[in-house]
Image 1: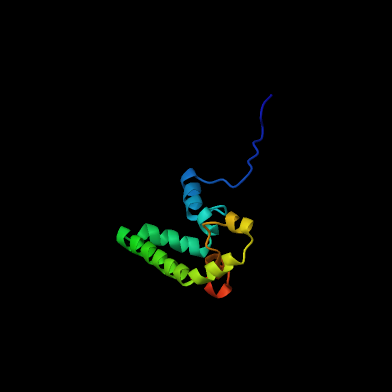
Image 2: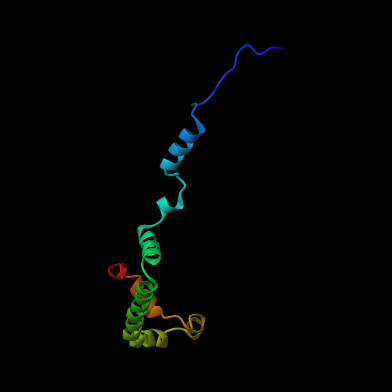
Length: 110
């Protein structure tokens, strides 16, 4: 049996043209395109700043939130004094007043 016709499907391109076009496009499933803005900024900061700047930022972050936790110490003690013994045991080691502070919308950006 002889083939007297050839059918071609798709867009014909030279391999180099195809690769150039493919490399210029961003894939829809590229994780970098769907990262939350805050996470993207954190990754960029961590990868573009020097080790000292990253370390300083982390130390500043922990100092800030440690100070906030200290401010809430009495509130924490008051909450725990009113708790059932079993509940208090279940959340032992957790800073509940601190977690409550983080859930208040005005502190969401802190």
